[in-house]
Image 1 (cartoon, rainbow, N blue to C red):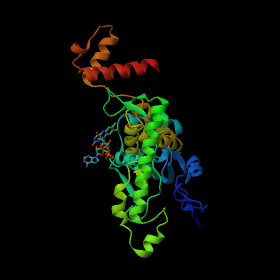
Image 2: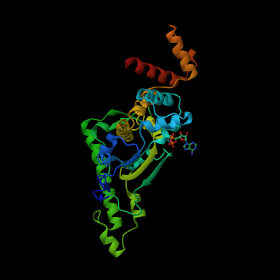
Image 3: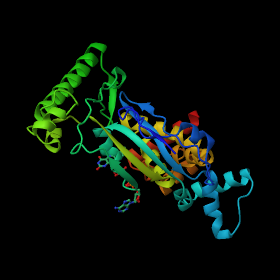
Length: 316
Ligand SMILES: Cc1cc2nc3c(=O)[nH]c(=O)nc-3n(C[C@H](O)[C@H](O)[C@H](O)COP(=O)(O)OP(=O)(O)OC[C@H]3O[C@@H](n4cnc5c(N)ncnc54)[C@H](O)[C@@H]3O)c2cc1C
């Protein structure tokens, strides 16, 4: 068995060259994409380091209680859909995935809120951070949304967008210049400071860096909790910069567990839950009755959300 060292910046490190046979369930599509970095944002990436299980692992776990082995593929799909529909979640926990992710720190702060994963992050106490920071594209440079306090709205003019981007870049460059001044290194080569011991400690020097600085981590999670992450972070309400990572992971999940992925899209991602009052509104509408928000028992916010959901559904 051998290993090939490559470029850490681009996520191509410790690539395993082994082609040993295994008795474990494997997925051909996943074997093909293992270790490949998928670019996200301007300097980020996601790559699959390892995975465990496939669609049949979910089915086998669900059937163990009945003492029955794997059945036909169509029955497997029906079972997975049933499990997803009824929130029977533990069979999905039988599958796991380990990702190497390079992401800006402000995205990492949102991501780390998902506590049900195992994380090991690059240590900026131990190592010097690469001079890499996120700069949004013009398309993402937008005004503060008035309707959603956590969102962005209108595009800036090209001239204003350029001004914003230049300011962000200048600030980040200045911060990195100061970082290296504090470390007493002119570039990411820290040999001089290490030799004379006169540079500020890395654990303190890093505090001058912006939230746009890229960090890296290994992130291991089971499929149930990954679906929870994706439902929240691939959603249109999630910030664009984390959403693009979630979308990249969704593509990987589609190749890894295609049946579970389809059920997830059907029941979680593109489906919806209705409150008792909302269901009552829908029933009345189907019955041809006119109903207004004040008599619906829904708040104006709930009413707006319900109308949005129904409009989306009627469009598709
Ligand atoms: C659009 C959006 C906006 C957000 N805005 C904010 C914000 O303004 N401020 C903010 O602070 N956060 C915000 N969050 C983060 C959000 O509140 C959650 O912390 C985050 O999405 C993680 O979700 P989770 O707890 O379900 O995930 P996980 O931590 O992976 O947990 C999964 C599930 O496990 C259970 N669980 C895990 N740990 C515990 C525990 N310790 N105790 C009890 N149950 C546990 C819970 O059932 C939980 O739902 C936002 C998230 C989104 C998607």
